[in-house]
Structure formats: structure tokens, C-alpha cells
Image (cartoon, rainbow, N blue to C red; front, top):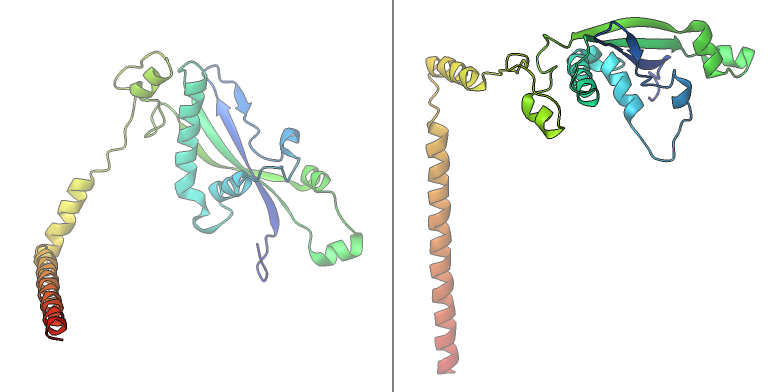
Length: 220
């Protein structure tokens, strides 16, 4: 966004859905499509930045986001098409180079649409198989929520993270290195006991000082 490393290309994301009849549908997700060209809109949206992030405009090249976004498209298509999922979802990176300041100085301003038509390139960056990819299918409780027919129980492919087993394996390795997982727990408990005792003693001193002040006032 800012110098000394400004963007050198305009980047877009195209989402292609292949349905059960092998028809490929472009979801027209970015400003390469005429309906999406009026920018900025009255209401601010970060959708273009999200699109660029997914197809790899920034750090990480979007590898984590691509699979989950494509799987979301699989589910959303099924939700809005009577529960029938597509065969696959393709994410396509589209870009064209931004002319340098020297070029603009010599040739004058350019029309982005015309430059896109002349120079744009595209690259398929991810393909999701909606039948086999993890979490690419609508679970039956979501189907029931939207009044869609139930799918066979083995159709949904959940993501088993095995966090408990991973945590146990991690603790096993740490114990092998001499780590006591309860040491911190008892240490924290000791701190609470100390603070509680200190607060109790402070309250006793406060009560004693108030009583001493009342007796002094009575004598006067």
C-alpha cells in the first residue's frame, strides 16, 4: 500500500464452479466483471482486499485461505441449490501490471479497463473437490435448518483435529524433559493464598486504626 514497496499489479480473484452437469459457472466475484466496476461504493467493503489475500497478494501466498474459501463455496452452492453440491470449485488469480511512474509521465494516464483487456493474465491457484475435501459438504443439521433433504451419513467429511491427543503427546514430551505440569498450578495457588492473607491483615489493621481513632475522639 505504501512506499517504498507499493503494489506493482492489480490483482483479482475469479471463482469458477463446476456443477453436476459439468457446466462451469463464473461467480463474478471481483471487478473484472462489469457489474462490479463502480468503486468505491457508498458502503465500504473489504471484499477486494479479502480476495487479494486469498489468491496470494500478501504474505503466506494465501495457501491457508484458499482451501477453506473454496470449501465454503462448495457448501454455499449446495445450500442455495436445493442441497445439490457442485463437483469442484476453482480459484483463479487474475492480474495485470500497473505502469511505472516513468511510463505514465511519458505516455499520460491510462484506462484500467483497457489495460486489463490488453495485458491481464490468469493462473489457477486452487481446486477443491466438493465430494472428498474436508468440510466441503453441508452437514445434515445445516440441511435441516434450511429445509434441504438429508444426505447419507458418510457424505459429510468432518475435520478431526485430535487436539486432546496432540496436547497429551506434547505434555508427554515435556514430562520426559523434567517438566512438572502441576508446579505452575501450585505456584499460582500459593500466590493467591499469600495475597489473601495480606488482604486479611490489611483489613485487621484498618479496623484497629478506626477503633483507635474513635477512642481518641471520645477522650477529647
